[in-house]
Length: 522
Image (cartoon, rainbow, N blue to C red; front, top):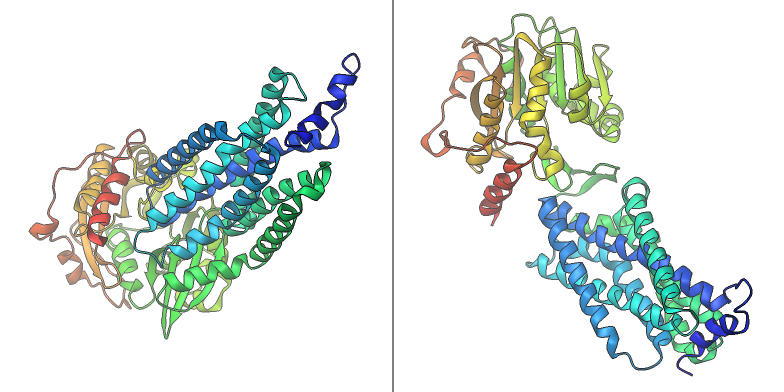
């Protein structure tokens, strides 16, 4: 009875050895399941890695540790499969149902647990170990079920072929279709449904259907739970974010590039990208005046201005205060971001309707690639990019990137770069300074106090000498010509110290940033 499915699989193999074989329904379902389970298994692995990177930062560390833990657990699962003595089909079905439940709910669970538990990594690796262990059981059990129906070499080649093709499908679908269009929580539930569907399909096609009544009932129940979860995925995401953010959420959306969240409390509007605060409307003017005016105020006639990042339009608002500016080109990766800040009334009031100004041109592109291909020269360049929390952002702080940006800076032009906190992360800050110098630019580091962030650092850069005199446009709330000079004074706890140049092949800045902010935040 234990191997009745395998016997059914092999029935045609014995009786039709001399003619082309067609797989029986159970055999076809088992072989097809190799593709499905491989796709699901890799998706769960990618989900855990991506969520860990999103919540904990340092994508390389998170992907490496999650994938390593997952593969280790798979090895343990495969090793334990040797102790299965009877009824591998029943166990395979049960394993599929367990993976469906744990894997399908994993993304939602991780997002919900992050603001609730003190030791999030324990929860993360517990889930990864459980999924990996069950996935490790799948392929050995599948081979054992099929071995009595086919030549062993055929079993191995067929199952592994479908396994590898499924892995390829997952690796392509995940970044190109699943995350951009479904989001991580809904993707988890969808592939949980796929695992449960595999189990149910096997139950329905094997002759032993009546013996698997309990498993069949469990499969339908799990499918129902996962379907409800998929429908309620956006609500689950909002529950998790409500617990994570202090203020009520005004807007939240996932894009192919990031998670955008706007919160509001009274007159204070805050923007978060991937959980990291970008601005508070109560004090953003301090940051953006300090970012823009020390650079443009030192250019004789800043007609052509380039902004890299700054998809909220707040830096552009300050740039347009300078008389003589004829064209502003803003390059930001995410079209959803620039659309949001172009169309929402509350946000356009904040940025002064900057994106509707006829002088402003918005280009949605990766800044690194755009800078390499761009032509022309700019009188001023404002680099307003998110902090280097991972390697995809860290590349925008490398010597390779700054060399291309320096090529676009006109003679006599000025560039300003937001450069994280010289108080909290002094080595990271001075690494940005060293990297700018390494491409032949002269620099003048400075800092400003922004209540939402504390002491925040910026760096002026130019091909030639950086003038001391600066013109600050009228109507500002923070910066004056007299006060601007004080920004260049660094007390001992923020003073310059040795720091490495950030290169594409080492990304030293990302490591420094993570370590220093990690110590500060505990």
